[in-house]
View 1 (cartoon, rainbow, N blue to C red):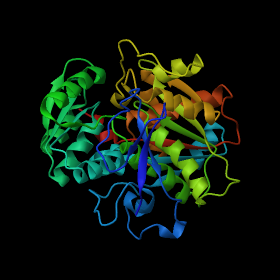
View 2 (tube, rainbow, N blue to C red):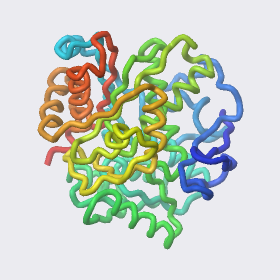
View 3 (tube, helix red, strand yellow):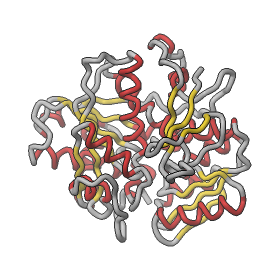
View 4 (cartoon, rainbow, N blue to C red):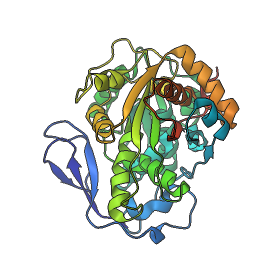
Amino acid sequence: MSSWHLDCSACDYTQAGDTLASVCPTCGQPLLVHYDSAWPDRDAILPRWDMWRYAPVLPLLEGEVPVSLGEGATPMHELPKLARELGIGRLWVKDEGLNPTASFKARGMSAAVTRAKALGVPGLVVPTAGNAGAALTAYAAAAGIPVRVYAPRSTPSPILATIEALGADLQLVDGHIGDAGKQSRAFAAEHGYFDISTLREPYRIEGKKTMGIELAEQLDWTLPTHVIYPTGGGTGLIGMWKVFAEMRAGGWIGKDVEFPHMIVAQATGCAPMVRAFEAKADRATPWENPETHASGLRVPGPLGDRLILRALYESNGDAAAVDEDTIRTQTLRLSRASGVDAAPEGGCALGVLEKLVREKRIPADAEVLVFNTGSGASYRF
């Protein structure tokens, strides 16, 4: 299996991979996993049907058993009729709503809880817009680790019910995920629980990067021209951009395969990354009074803002936001065009695609992958 160390994403700090790690102690920015040996050939992929089939290129030590609930290996559906309606070459939707606890968060939590269990943490705590809390609670239950979740009261009730059913100590918070984060960090400091929130530990990215490996494998080791990603904390976008480079260096994709243009999709009521991208900034300023019914996008100040923007600039990507009515309309459109029970975040991604095509920011011959990051059923109450 792998050996790795941790590098700060912003300064020259490094840390061993076999120690408990949060953000960089020097500058407070996220730590990233760097593998110490070359990637194996693609024939090292394991004959199992979850994201741990890629275990040889994930943070798993020899003899360790991952904490897995069958995450990953999600379908990718081509939508030729919708592509024609939009006026682009090809269109796919990757349905992450079929993961355990009905969202893409399962991937990151599987990797993070696997490492936390190996390092013997006494408990785990997370602030959440919803889906991350449900995923953490499930994987913590599977690992036998106590967990506390801080969630805004406005979190969709089906997600809160899932968190409670799986046994978390659920604390409801007045405000948004930033307010939940403050309480989460205070609890961690007082009680010794490990804060596993977005980019405050280095392994959720490693789980999320498997989306990038999967989409390449599903396209016979090629890549789409554009990836549209509904962005709250942005871990998945950061992870995919990281793994595209790892796959090229490791020979899993050819050196002639061009990387996708990475595109951030946000809601007009909470669009800190769109505002920063349009200003050509290298970081985002927190969004005031964030509001959107797509709760996964209601992240006013993502810790990974610099890494998200870096991926956009390096990929010659883009960022755009659409309003609440557009999100609702496009969520239904995506569901009815594909059979996928789309979450509002997926509808946001489709709405941004249509906007960018209309504004000629995506060309007519584009081959576009839209991510649906969760299940619509989680938002009905």
